[in-house]
Length: 299
Image 1 (cartoon, rainbow, N blue to C red):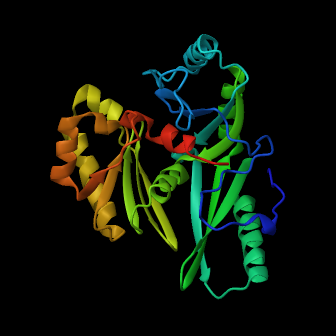
Image 2: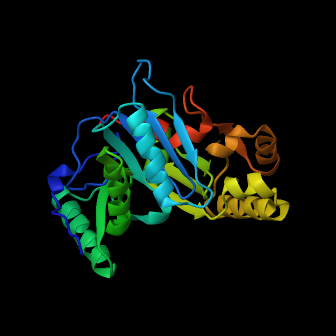
C-alpha cells in the first residue's frame, strides 16, 4: 500500500481544486493538457492569450488499442516538436473514487487534522491494492466537509508511463470529477450548481455546494449512441439521470462534453431534462471541455 506522508499544514480551502499528490509531480505550470479515455486522446496547448503553436488534437480509437494511442501520440510529439514538454492530465472518473466526510464547522484545527489522518488510514487500510490519495476541505457555515480522493496506483502508473513513453513529462495529475467542479468554480457558476458531463465513454452527473459534493458515473457514452442511434438506451439514460436528479434534489443542470457537438442531441436533452444551459470550452470544440479546464490550472 502506498501511504504517502500526510502533512496537515498542506490543507487548503477550496479556492482552487487540489491535484493528487504524487511524488513525481512538481508545481510549475505545464505547457500541455492531455486527456486519455478508452476511445480517445485529446491534446491541448495551455497558452494564455498567446497563439497556440498547434491546433487542438483529438484522436479516436474505437478498439481502445493502447499501442496505437502511443504511436499516434508520438507522431504528434515529433510533428510539433513537443519532446520533453510538461503535461497536466487527469485520472478518469472510473479509475478513482471521491468520498465526503462531514464535521461541525466549529471543529478546531488540531481535531480536524486528527480526523483527516484517521479517515485516510481507515480508507487506505480497506483497499487491497496500491493507491494514491489527496483531500480538500469544503467550509460551510454549519458544516465542514473533507473530500478524500483515492485512485489506483496501477491506473496512475499506466497513465504516467504512457505520457513518458511518447517523450513527454507528467507534471500534474488531476481527477476528472474535480476538473469538472473546477470549471464551475473558475467560471463562478451560482452555487450550488450541477453539471451533466457527457463524453464518448461514459457520463458524469455532479452537484457541488459549499459543504457538499455528490457525483455519479453513468455508464452511457455518447460514442455508441452516435454510431447506432439506439433510442431505447438513450431513453434509459434520460431515465437514470432524471432519477438521480430526484434523489439528489437537483432543480436544474448545466450540460457539457462531446455530445454538445450534435444539435439534434441538444434538442433531446432540452426536451427530457431540466437543462439550465450549456457549458463551453472557450473557443474550443465542446470535446475539449476537460483539457480546457486543465489548461486553466495555475499550479
